[in-house]
Length: 94
Image 1 (spheres, rainbow, N blue to C red):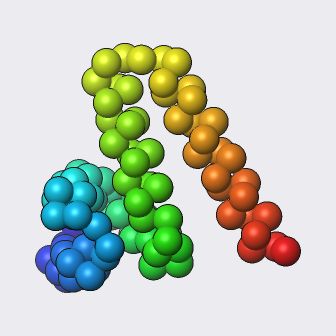
Image 2: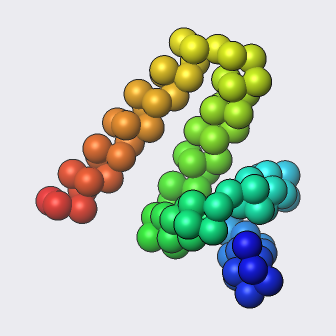
Image 3: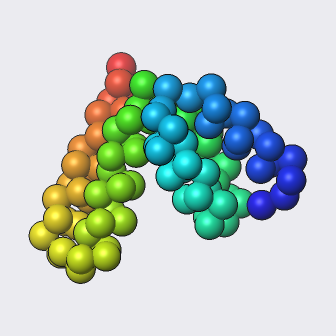
């Protein structure tokens, strides 16, 4: 990522309703992401600020499922994620 975007991410994370640990978690994850993915995640947070905690939980669980190679947990997470996205789309079109 470029310096300007890094500053934007840092500024947004500072204002977000997250614990300090969660801010660090997202900062590290966004630094590792491609610029396109980082922009997409940041846009999602800006559009749906009430979903930041949910997204944090999902990503932390994904990281843990990958570390432990827990396919059942991974499938459950993807199912929950799909349901949440379906709900978002439904609410946007209602």
